[in-house]
Image 1 (cartoon, rainbow, N blue to C red):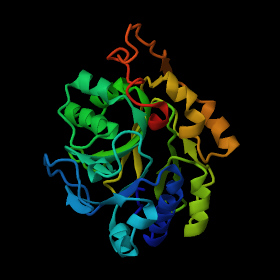
Image 2 (tube, rainbow, N blue to C red):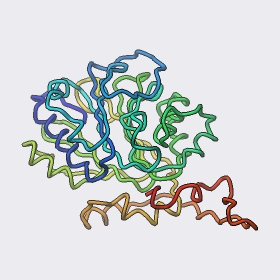
Image 3 (cartoon, rainbow, N blue to C red):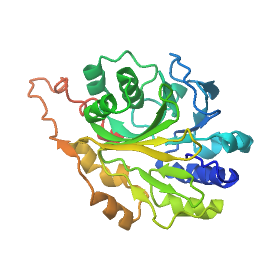
Image 4 (spheres, one colour):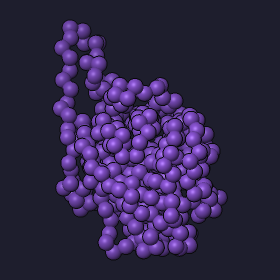
Length: 320
């Protein structure tokens, strides 16, 4: 959520919390919410990935924990959310990294970035391409944000990292080197939807069907021009430094998926979608798909396949 200063905060807060409850259908392993505590700050720090349940970092308060959103969210946080000019929420269905480490739960702080990721990507490709350090946790999310943080740029370097991502990814993050900017990006398959209410508050989510349901629960009226399904290969920059969400730029890049991402799209990307919304999103599919890796020919059935293939290392049901 990015809040508009032109209205009372309670309805946008209620909408944000309602989206958190609805997002439980996308994952029950952990949940969290990062809330901007002040107008953006340029404070620089190199603290590690946040592994505490409630902490502050560079003008943001990050609350997270194991289990579903309703077990992490507490009404006592409502006052802080009312004052937050922006908030980034997440629910997790673990695909990489165990559920017992809080460092694997989002939102993550990685270098100057605070953000979330919905999807599953090849972390090893990013580690190899950008010479990344060892991660604190075990997730591909951390590797994505390490690469974005290490490149240290808003547009061209960011697009270079997004083009290097192979797999499913919907990403939302802020970078404290460029305070007041929220970055939303969709690579391949993983959906990302955006809407605005009549008071000017902006919201995003993994399922466009959540917006009208959350709006009814929160007493919010959405704008008549509806809901935008972000196309694959899109980076959207939103400026919230003035107290109003304002589009600061939108850029295209080439999104790349793996063969298994296309196979699993109905299960992992469109779970909970109406058939109408799924068809609308599929109509805009524009990613490149890498061919499925061929298993190595070996005399020993115990020898794994080629080192540049991740399929043999993790059973398919675990990477869903």
